[in-house]
Image (cartoon, rainbow, N blue to C red; front, side, top):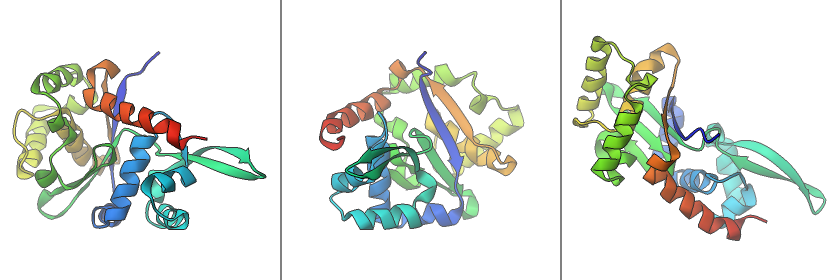
Length: 216
């Protein structure tokens, strides 16, 4: 059964987060990795080719600076060697960290958004208002909105500090939820029916277009 569109929120340590935000090539690698693996893992060689960079430069970045964002899903024997197929731990994920003054920094590889959330916005802004309302209605009873009144005030406050204004979007909620619950060592997940997420459908369409060129 189709479990729908699961969006995972994870807290990143500052060193890992800033290594990506402040490095254009790492941002490009992550965006390509996440978008191209929506429909399944790809090889490192194919990822390098899609980026137009040297294979060994990609390996260096993956192993030394981006190791938290990918894993080997399976291997295949090819021309006497074993070829690794890689993908993110969760392809539909949003990563955040809290900086000074409760500033939220976000990495959203699928949407190619990296930086302070108050400056870059969120992926939901690319959807029509009616779509955002539909998604908000769907997640209204889920855990990321299961807050007591005091927690809801904290959630709204941290978003307002970061220049986010009501009505908040689903990604606003998952970002704030992850920030608040990171102190408890927890992340956050929201679940949308696949037919409801126009953004993900666009990404899947792009991945399908490139699949024939990249996969052996």
